[in-house]
Length: 276
Image 1: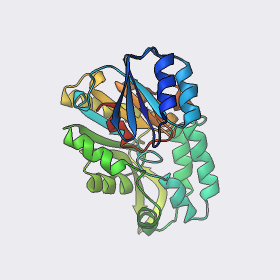
Image 2 (image 1 turned 90 degrees about the vertical axis):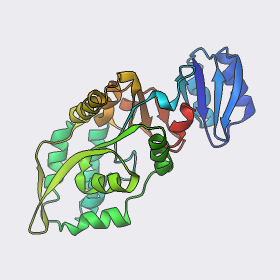
Image 3 (image 1 turned 60 degrees about the horizontal axis):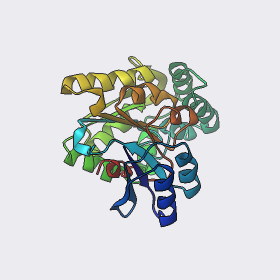
Image 4 (image 1 turned 30 degrees about the vertical axis):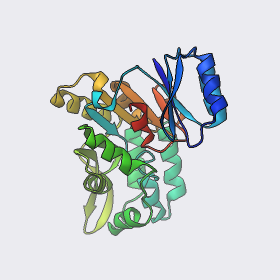
């Protein structure tokens, strides 16, 4: 087992300390922001050391490479992008604080996602559909490293899926922009150019996310070990659990506990260095 550490400025004493506590055989530089600590034995002290140094880490089987994966599944809001779209839509309706509070509770796992989404969408009733374009054009940004990550995955021949409890208006555009192979999310109902406060069809919740992952894996003929998934909140737990390697991006504590790797400091393309 190797210990991979990621960071913008990893100091040599930190690397030596990690190698010592894990009984490692060597330290290898992968690139400017990543090191491989070879033949490391997992040790509880690693979490504290990395936290204090503000670096990320993951234990990766020796020899495991990016091309060993065939499927990558990612959440959208607060993972691939920097916002919760529904909160920003609500802001244009003068209801951001109320909606954001529900969103945050749902992401912490304190509220049922389907029920919370129904409540939040209902508050948007009457808002002009043009608000969606305003959010996409003026408020939505990709999180650092997103474009490089997806490009690297595609170069490795990995099938990419964007699955979200958010909305098709945004996932469809990001699918085209970044070149995802699939995108799944919720469709907001619109009548006469205004949101009705309802969602069309079944809601994409935590179980639906995991279902889309499993369906893609089965179609591609892959084993669970060949699947990588990333998210940030409670709604991503079943999806992360269904993947062979689960990543939590700036996560809520409830997701942190089940992920194989947490990116608290590194950009999204740091994922590529884990399997270089």
